[in-house]
Image (cartoon, rainbow, N blue to C red; front, side, top):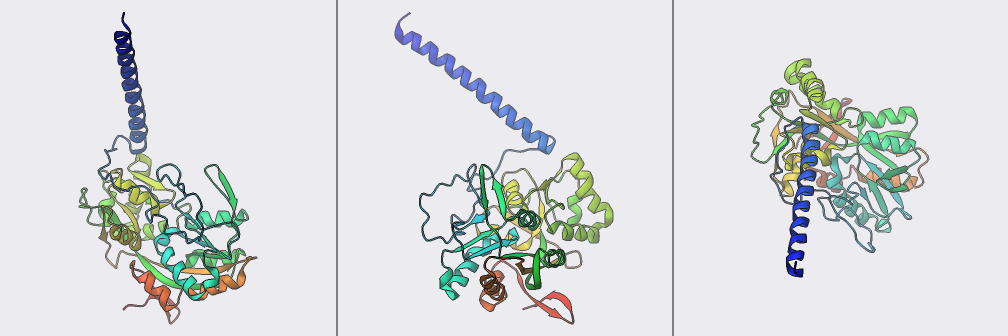
Length: 350
């Protein structure tokens, strides 16, 4: 056998083996996806920049970034921002407005330039931030463990008040904006979701916030009950979870739009600001409005963390967060300024 023929045969055998291996991997991935969605997985329809971070480094204002290494699908700390080496202010922010943090920090630093490049913030769900608080600020993501003790905790007003009562935070709670719910759907809404009632249909695949640590789930369940009673709430959060047509997220502000863009879900309830951000970013995402009589309003608040290393800086942020410049930034994404009238928590209509 001449050398050219031998090489050709070896290459053919290699190609056949490679194709077989590829088929096995594809089968395994499909099987894993089908297990998650009980045979309802589809090929992703959107091939754009589907993986976070979606702000391309804007959510870090450090002055020296050194060697940049980000691979969005595999090496990407999308909800951790800034330099932990020696920050002057550490913020734990409920992830519902991660997209607003870059302009908020920029405005704060414009007013207080001594903080330029020295603010660190996290935007994971409020319940998970509480776990980090209780762990002394230590957190692990992948193979990396670090410590960032919070100065300010910002989440829903109820969570903030509860944490003041438990001793994790220091009064007063400082409310600043409100938000309402919406149904996030892929662009063109292929499942034809038009209302909360449609979420109870067995054929509609959902990505829904986990009640265990995502505060929005409480408001969602209340809205579902307004729209269809306990039967609808149980269908979405019990029956469909059991049969796999509802998947509970760990971090819905990242997972829900991702699953929609990948074609793995047909809808998911989020804060309206999150859908507005995705639409402004040019992603193939849309939303379905929820009527006021079925909707729920979230009030955002913050408070000083007990034992904060930078209490004065924390108070500056809590003063800034409900200032006119800060509120103008929030309004870009559909938030409304908070105002209390006769002790009632509501949004100021403008």
